[in-house]
Length: 375
Ligand code: NDP
Ligand code: GDR
Image 1 (spheres, helix red, strand yellow):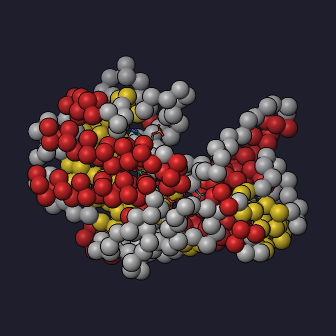
Image 2 (spheres, rainbow, N blue to C red):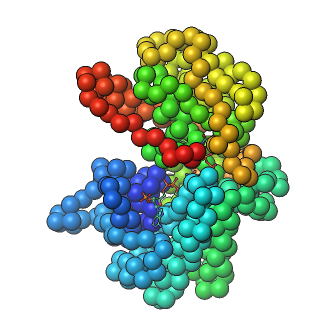
């Protein structure tokens, strides 16, 4: 039975990848940070009690900031495959905690690679690094492919640039099977609540049910190439099954604006929107309502407004990937479109908002988690 070790197993991708690998018959080990509250919501459905016989999904406390911990876990598990998905993954937050982001995202990758080498596992253990389209930043070429030059625009992207190159370096220096998946944005109902797509689907679902009144946004003109996380974790595994390690761009090859995503999400709720104004003054008003999914709204309500705090010190305005190499070499194609994914996310967030509204209407106090400051 093959063994995989996933850092970031409690995150969006980690949870889908763990499911995927378990279905393939792997023994899956995940590194989980200690937190003051449970942080395993995304993997609770695949949790296995350590007392069960033949347990195939095992969690280890750990942190990418702690080399001795990583070395000990690697020594114990002796994995065939390591997926390094753990990261401080929020671009805007990286401007607030740049040093921590560098420590975890850049140095954390080095710590893992070095632990593999130190333990003499470099010929046994295959290594996947979660690289990112943020490396392209100020884009030099449209669409972006494996050979497009990088120009990172945030402490997150700069840290990931180090992680990208140290992965290439360990491949070249030590003959390790180590590769980078340069993944463009991918989302799902499990996406963190402060990334733009989830913020929109959750915010509009809450507004439709009267739990919140307005969604405050940053740059609506930003263009992104959005795919579904399920399609992308399949690709992460495929990248480790080749004869030789290579780096791949994973994207859909289609881009949309944040404003378009808001319109799709609203349409899923039966709401037609009218955008007025430009830049920091822009607002969106309810122009039409159909069906019963937005009982708290009426035509003319202002549901989206701009708050300049959500603009970043340096923005990545446009990203569009060229996944030709992945299609040609690996035979990979994304199966879920951005619009289908948006519909799935809205449906999930609407169910949650309806539950909250129901409980509130029956006198229960239901706190709605909110973002911290402008992030
Ligand atoms: P998430 O933010 O959902 O998950 C990040 C994971 O990393 C969580 O499990 C988190 O733990 C864990 N983590 C954070 N800090 C540490 C640390 N110090 N030590 C160990 N684990 C830590 O990210 P995604 O699942 O969306 O992304 C997975 C990876 O892919 C990340 O590296 C991200 O940068 C990268 N990426 C993501 C893209 C996307 O569009 N989703 C695109 C390109 C790259 P906890 O649950 O405790 O917070
Ligand atoms: P990104 O994702 O920065 O691309 O990084 P995010 O969803 O945070 O932003 C996408 C674009 O939307 C604009 N935007 C807003 N973003 C957020 N979060 N909140 C807002 O209110 C808002 N308004 C407009 C942003 O400015 C940006 O242009 C994600 C992460 O998953 C990274 O880890 C990963 O590497 C990249 O995708 C690829």
